[in-house]
Length: 267
Image 1 (cartoon, rainbow, N blue to C red):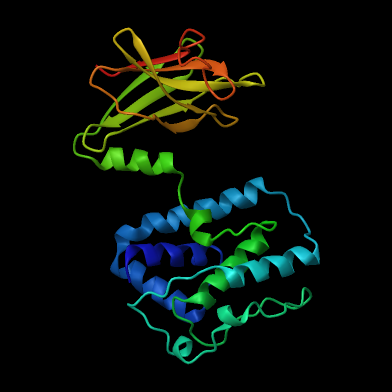
Image 2: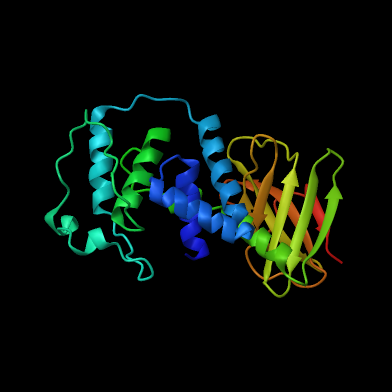
Protein backbone atom coordinates (compact mmCIF):
# COMPACT_ATOMS: atom_id res chain seq x y z
CA UNK A 1 0.00 0.00 0.00
CA UNK A 2 1.34 3.45 -0.87
CA UNK A 3 0.79 6.67 1.07
CA UNK A 4 -1.93 7.93 -1.24
CA UNK A 5 -3.99 4.78 -0.73
CA UNK A 6 -3.51 5.09 3.02
CA UNK A 7 -4.78 8.68 2.90
CA UNK A 8 -7.97 7.39 1.26
CA UNK A 9 -8.36 4.78 3.97
CA UNK A 10 -7.79 7.42 6.65
CA UNK A 11 -10.67 9.42 5.16
CA UNK A 12 -12.89 6.35 5.27
CA UNK A 13 -11.85 5.61 8.85
CA UNK A 14 -12.70 9.16 9.93
CA UNK A 15 -16.14 8.74 8.34
CA UNK A 16 -16.62 5.29 9.93
CA UNK A 17 -17.12 3.94 6.41
CA UNK A 18 -14.56 1.11 6.08
CA UNK A 19 -15.36 -2.57 5.81
CA UNK A 20 -13.78 -4.91 8.36
CA UNK A 21 -11.11 -5.88 5.82
CA UNK A 22 -10.25 -2.29 4.95
CA UNK A 23 -10.19 -1.35 8.63
CA UNK A 24 -7.64 -4.11 9.25
CA UNK A 25 -5.58 -2.91 6.27
CA UNK A 26 -5.75 0.63 7.63
CA UNK A 27 -4.58 -0.40 11.10
CA UNK A 28 -1.76 -2.56 9.71
CA UNK A 29 -0.53 0.21 7.41
CA UNK A 30 -0.60 2.76 10.22
CA UNK A 31 1.37 0.41 12.49
CA UNK A 32 3.94 -0.13 9.75
CA UNK A 33 4.16 3.55 8.76
CA UNK A 34 3.66 5.74 11.85
CA UNK A 35 4.82 8.76 9.84
CA UNK A 36 1.50 8.58 7.96
CA UNK A 37 -0.30 9.70 11.12
CA UNK A 38 -0.63 13.18 9.59
CA UNK A 39 -3.26 11.83 7.17
CA UNK A 40 -5.27 10.51 10.12
CA UNK A 41 -5.21 13.95 11.77
CA UNK A 42 -6.15 15.73 8.54
CA UNK A 43 -9.12 13.43 7.93
CA UNK A 44 -10.35 13.77 11.52
CA UNK A 45 -9.99 17.56 11.39
CA UNK A 46 -11.89 17.73 8.09
CA UNK A 47 -14.80 15.68 9.41
CA UNK A 48 -14.88 17.75 12.62
CA UNK A 49 -14.89 20.97 10.59
CA UNK A 50 -17.80 19.72 8.50
CA UNK A 51 -19.85 18.77 11.56
CA UNK A 52 -19.14 22.13 13.21
CA UNK A 53 -20.02 24.35 10.26
CA UNK A 54 -22.87 22.54 8.47
CA UNK A 55 -26.34 22.73 9.95
CA UNK A 56 -28.22 19.41 9.84
CA UNK A 57 -30.56 19.33 6.86
CA UNK A 58 -33.10 16.73 5.86
CA UNK A 59 -32.56 16.38 2.08
CA UNK A 60 -35.39 15.39 -0.22
CA UNK A 61 -35.44 11.75 -1.33
CA UNK A 62 -34.69 12.82 -4.89
CA UNK A 63 -31.27 14.15 -3.83
CA UNK A 64 -30.23 10.79 -2.45
CA UNK A 65 -31.30 8.94 -5.57
CA UNK A 66 -29.59 11.41 -7.88
CA UNK A 67 -26.41 11.38 -5.81
CA UNK A 68 -26.17 7.59 -5.95
CA UNK A 69 -26.71 7.67 -9.70
CA UNK A 70 -23.90 10.21 -10.13
CA UNK A 71 -21.55 8.16 -7.94
CA UNK A 72 -22.11 5.09 -10.11
CA UNK A 73 -21.03 7.12 -13.17
CA UNK A 74 -17.75 8.38 -11.70
CA UNK A 75 -14.62 6.86 -13.30
CA UNK A 76 -12.59 4.82 -10.82
CA UNK A 77 -8.95 3.78 -10.94
CA UNK A 78 -8.13 0.09 -10.82
CA UNK A 79 -4.65 -0.09 -9.20
CA UNK A 80 -2.50 -3.00 -10.28
CA UNK A 81 -1.06 -3.64 -6.83
CA UNK A 82 -4.24 -5.11 -5.28
CA UNK A 83 -6.45 -7.01 -7.68
CA UNK A 84 -9.93 -7.76 -6.37
CA UNK A 85 -10.97 -11.33 -7.24
CA UNK A 86 -14.61 -10.32 -7.08
CA UNK A 87 -14.08 -7.52 -9.57
CA UNK A 88 -12.54 -9.70 -12.29
CA UNK A 89 -15.61 -11.89 -12.73
CA UNK A 90 -18.19 -9.20 -12.05
CA UNK A 91 -20.59 -7.76 -14.58
CA UNK A 92 -19.53 -4.42 -16.07
CA UNK A 93 -22.09 -2.32 -14.21
CA UNK A 94 -20.64 0.97 -15.48
CA UNK A 95 -21.29 -0.10 -19.07
CA UNK A 96 -24.79 -1.24 -18.19
CA UNK A 97 -25.60 2.11 -16.58
CA UNK A 98 -26.64 2.92 -13.02
CA UNK A 99 -29.05 0.52 -11.41
CA UNK A 100 -32.41 1.88 -10.21
CA UNK A 101 -32.14 3.25 -6.69
CA UNK A 102 -34.97 3.10 -4.16
CA UNK A 103 -34.74 6.41 -2.26
CA UNK A 104 -36.26 4.73 0.81
CA UNK A 105 -33.84 1.79 0.87
CA UNK A 106 -31.00 1.59 3.36
CA UNK A 107 -27.47 2.22 2.14
CA UNK A 108 -26.12 -1.19 1.05
CA UNK A 109 -23.15 -2.53 3.01
CA UNK A 110 -21.10 -5.25 1.29
CA UNK A 111 -20.64 -8.42 3.29
CA UNK A 112 -17.32 -9.42 1.75
CA UNK A 113 -13.96 -7.67 1.50
CA UNK A 114 -14.00 -5.32 -1.47
CA UNK A 115 -10.42 -4.24 -2.10
CA UNK A 116 -9.61 -0.79 -3.48
CA UNK A 117 -12.02 -0.55 -6.41
CA UNK A 118 -15.44 0.85 -7.20
CA UNK A 119 -17.30 -0.53 -4.21
CA UNK A 120 -15.03 1.02 -1.55
CA UNK A 121 -15.37 4.44 -3.16
CA UNK A 122 -19.14 3.97 -3.34
CA UNK A 123 -19.33 3.31 0.40
CA UNK A 124 -17.10 6.27 1.26
CA UNK A 125 -19.06 8.64 -0.95
CA UNK A 126 -22.35 7.43 0.50
CA UNK A 127 -21.00 8.13 3.99
CA UNK A 128 -20.01 11.64 2.97
CA UNK A 129 -23.57 12.15 1.77
CA UNK A 130 -24.75 11.21 5.25
CA UNK A 131 -22.55 13.94 6.76
CA UNK A 132 -23.56 16.84 4.51
CA UNK A 133 -25.86 17.61 1.62
CA UNK A 134 -23.84 17.54 -1.60
CA UNK A 135 -26.65 18.48 -3.94
CA UNK A 136 -26.01 17.17 -7.44
CA UNK A 137 -22.28 17.84 -7.72
CA UNK A 138 -19.81 15.00 -8.33
CA UNK A 139 -17.55 15.24 -5.24
CA UNK A 140 -15.03 12.55 -4.31
CA UNK A 141 -13.72 11.79 -0.85
CA UNK A 142 -10.22 12.67 -2.04
CA UNK A 143 -11.38 16.14 -3.07
CA UNK A 144 -13.19 16.62 0.24
CA UNK A 145 -10.23 15.61 2.41
CA UNK A 146 -7.44 17.19 0.33
CA UNK A 147 -5.81 20.11 2.17
CA UNK A 148 -5.98 23.54 0.48
CA UNK A 149 -3.22 24.31 -1.99
CA UNK A 150 -1.92 27.09 0.25
CA UNK A 151 -1.51 24.67 3.17
CA UNK A 152 0.32 22.21 0.93
CA UNK A 153 2.64 24.99 -0.27
CA UNK A 154 3.35 26.05 3.32
CA UNK A 155 4.22 22.47 4.28
CA UNK A 156 6.55 22.16 1.30
CA UNK A 157 8.29 25.40 2.25
CA UNK A 158 8.68 24.37 5.89
CA UNK A 159 10.18 21.04 4.87
CA UNK A 160 12.69 22.63 2.46
CA UNK A 161 16.30 22.93 3.66
CA UNK A 162 16.39 26.62 2.73
CA UNK A 163 13.07 27.56 4.35
CA UNK A 164 12.97 31.07 5.78
CA UNK A 165 10.35 33.24 7.48
CA UNK A 166 9.83 36.77 8.79
CA UNK A 167 7.03 38.20 10.93
CA UNK A 168 5.59 41.59 11.75
CA UNK A 169 2.88 42.88 14.08
CA UNK A 170 0.93 45.87 12.81
CA UNK A 171 -0.43 48.73 14.95
CA UNK A 172 -3.95 47.26 14.86
CA UNK A 173 -2.69 43.94 16.27
CA UNK A 174 -2.59 42.05 12.97
CA UNK A 175 0.19 39.48 12.94
CA UNK A 176 1.60 38.49 9.53
CA UNK A 177 4.31 35.95 8.81
CA UNK A 178 5.91 35.44 5.42
CA UNK A 179 7.33 32.00 4.60
CA UNK A 180 9.47 31.34 1.54
CA UNK A 181 11.95 28.91 0.05
CA UNK A 182 14.09 29.59 -3.04
CA UNK A 183 14.39 25.88 -3.78
CA UNK A 184 10.62 25.38 -3.96
CA UNK A 185 10.01 28.73 -5.67
CA UNK A 186 7.05 29.36 -3.37
CA UNK A 187 6.11 32.02 -0.86
CA UNK A 188 3.17 32.09 1.54
CA UNK A 189 1.73 34.74 3.85
CA UNK A 190 0.04 33.61 7.07
CA UNK A 191 -2.12 36.19 8.85
CA UNK A 192 -3.98 36.43 12.15
CA UNK A 193 -6.30 39.26 13.17
CA UNK A 194 -6.85 40.87 9.76
CA UNK A 195 -9.81 43.28 10.06
CA UNK A 196 -13.03 42.44 8.24
CA UNK A 197 -13.47 44.38 5.00
CA UNK A 198 -16.42 46.29 3.64
CA UNK A 199 -18.48 44.64 0.94
CA UNK A 200 -17.00 44.99 -2.53
CA UNK A 201 -13.38 45.05 -1.37
CA UNK A 202 -10.63 42.49 -0.98
CA UNK A 203 -7.09 42.10 0.29
CA UNK A 204 -4.40 42.01 -2.41
CA UNK A 205 -0.85 40.69 -2.07
CA UNK A 206 2.21 42.41 -3.54
CA UNK A 207 5.90 41.83 -3.95
CA UNK A 208 7.46 45.26 -3.44
CA UNK A 209 10.77 45.14 -5.30
CA UNK A 210 12.65 48.36 -4.65
CA UNK A 211 10.03 50.96 -5.51
CA UNK A 212 8.02 48.66 -7.79
CA UNK A 213 4.92 46.82 -6.52
CA UNK A 214 4.14 43.56 -8.33
CA UNK A 215 0.63 42.12 -7.90
CA UNK A 216 0.65 38.62 -6.38
CA UNK A 217 -3.01 37.66 -5.99
CA UNK A 218 -5.94 38.32 -3.66
CA UNK A 219 -7.17 36.51 -0.56
CA UNK A 220 -9.95 36.54 2.02
CA UNK A 221 -9.29 35.84 5.71
CA UNK A 222 -11.78 33.92 7.81
CA UNK A 223 -13.97 35.43 10.53
CA UNK A 224 -10.99 35.55 12.90
CA UNK A 225 -8.78 37.32 10.37
CA UNK A 226 -6.75 34.17 9.76
CA UNK A 227 -5.52 33.26 6.29
CA UNK A 228 -2.87 31.17 4.55
CA UNK A 229 -2.30 32.70 1.12
CA UNK A 230 0.10 31.70 -1.65
CA UNK A 231 1.69 34.60 -3.50
CA UNK A 232 1.49 34.33 -7.27
CA UNK A 233 4.78 34.78 -9.06
CA UNK A 234 8.44 34.53 -8.15
CA UNK A 235 9.80 36.16 -5.03
CA UNK A 236 13.21 37.80 -5.25
CA UNK A 237 15.68 38.22 -2.42
CA UNK A 238 14.93 41.36 -0.47
CA UNK A 239 11.32 41.73 -1.61
CA UNK A 240 8.85 43.24 0.85
CA UNK A 241 5.60 41.30 1.02
CA UNK A 242 2.75 43.77 1.33
CA UNK A 243 -1.05 43.73 1.52
CA UNK A 244 -3.39 46.48 0.36
CA UNK A 245 -7.17 46.88 0.29
CA UNK A 246 -8.49 46.84 -3.26
CA UNK A 247 -11.82 46.64 -5.11
CA UNK A 248 -13.26 43.14 -5.42
CA UNK A 249 -11.18 41.17 -7.90
CA UNK A 250 -8.02 43.18 -7.25
CA UNK A 251 -6.52 46.48 -8.33
CA UNK A 252 -8.08 47.55 -11.65
CA UNK A 253 -4.86 49.05 -13.01
CA UNK A 254 -2.27 46.71 -11.51
CA UNK A 255 -0.99 49.24 -8.98
CA UNK A 256 -1.91 49.58 -5.28
CA UNK A 257 -4.97 51.72 -4.57
CA UNK A 258 -4.13 52.22 -0.88
CA UNK A 259 -1.17 52.31 1.41
CA UNK A 260 -0.16 48.82 2.64
CA UNK A 261 -2.03 47.57 5.71
CA UNK A 262 0.62 44.85 6.09
CA UNK A 263 4.28 44.95 5.11
CA UNK A 264 6.77 42.18 5.89
CA UNK A 265 10.42 42.81 5.14
CA UNK A 266 12.25 39.67 4.03
CA UNK A 267 15.79 41.05 4.13
